[in-house]
Each structure stands twice: as structure tokens, then as C-alpha cells.
Length: 236
Image 1: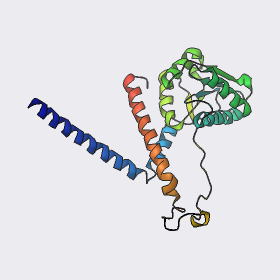
Image 2 (image 1 turned 180 degrees about the vertical axis):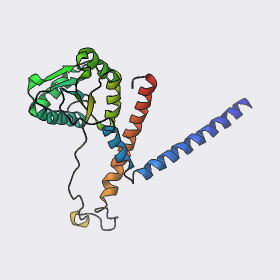
Image 3 (image 1 turned 120 degrees about the horizontal axis):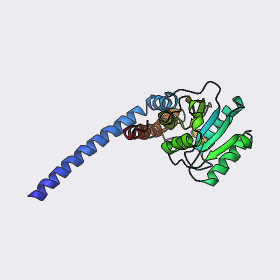
Image 4 (image 1 turned 30 degrees about the vertical axis):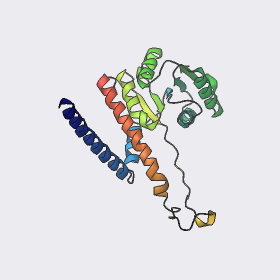
């Protein structure tokens, strides 16, 4: 009798979980047809404030291995900022990975940054540790203007984490991807497509935007969860 009641209760909870999961999935599919994921992602990259004035240092946070899209974008943007602020040094806040450090230094050099302008600290395995690392290594920079380079989705949380530790003049330089301005429509039959298949050649929104926005939704959901986690820990 007890077992039967337990099974009924478990099945009832499973049904609720499946209903909630289904509703969330339908909502995400519907939002992927809109620009909401794009704007949510852009908000995470810009809400904390953008670096527009002259800065004394460019702080680059690591996110993945090298070479990879995210790290190459961060090096690309850091080099661009460095060109406009020749007096600013670049600080790489990385985990203890000398291969990653060497690869990022090489990439910055290829992009025109003098090697003497680049320094690194290898103690940060996440955003909180990277902020603590900078506070411990360069405490005198807390009142100096800094440009923080990281992925757009990580920018808002990073700025809050650094400001929590006293970096009052840090602002963001989010490494957004560059949009592709090209006509991606084509003639399906002309390149050997089956004439009986639906012609998706001109539906670039369904071919690209829908799937890209679905990925952005996952990215944003993860980041909002991270923001909540950091807030509960008192890190932001």
C-alpha cells in the first residue's frame, strides 16, 4: 500500500516535471522566432557600461582553450583597444595553463601588440577568482580606469564581480561576434537540389537565425543562473 502510494506520487511529480519542461521548450521555440534572444544577449554585454574613455589597462579574462573562437575574439578586441590606447598595458587573467598564456601572447603580438605591453597572472579559474587575482596582484589599480574584455554574456557579471572588490572605474569591452553582411540566398535546383523538396533557399531566418537564437537562449539562461549564484554567494 505504501509502495503504491509512493509510485502514484512519483508519477504525479513526473507528469508535472514533463509539463513544465514541455511548456519551457515551447516558449523557447516560440522566442527563437523573435529578436528577444538577441536583445537579451546584447543586454548582458552592454548593461554594465562600455569603455569609451582612455584607460590605463586592458584586462582580458580567459574563457576556453586557444585557439578557439571566444579566445581569438577577445585577443582581437584587446588588440583593437590597445591600438587606441598606446599607454595601456594588457593583463591576461588565466587559469594555470602556460600553453594558453603563450598562445594568447602570440596572438596579440601577431595583431600588433608589443610583447612588453602584455603581462599575465595564472590564478583565475572562474570570474570570481580572476577578480580576486587582479585585486591581489594590482591593488593600486582599483581607482584607475580599466577596460574589461570578455565574452558578451559574461560581461555584466564580470563587471559586478570586479566592482564588488573595489574596482570602481572598470568598464566593459565585450567581444561580440562580427555580423556577416552577405546575401546567403541561393537557387536550390541550380546546385542540384531535389525539386520535390521544400525550397529553403530564401528562408535565411529559419535556416540561421532560428537556430542561432536557440543557442543564445541557452547561453543567456546559463548566465542568468550564474548571476543568481554569484548574488547568493555575495560575490556581486
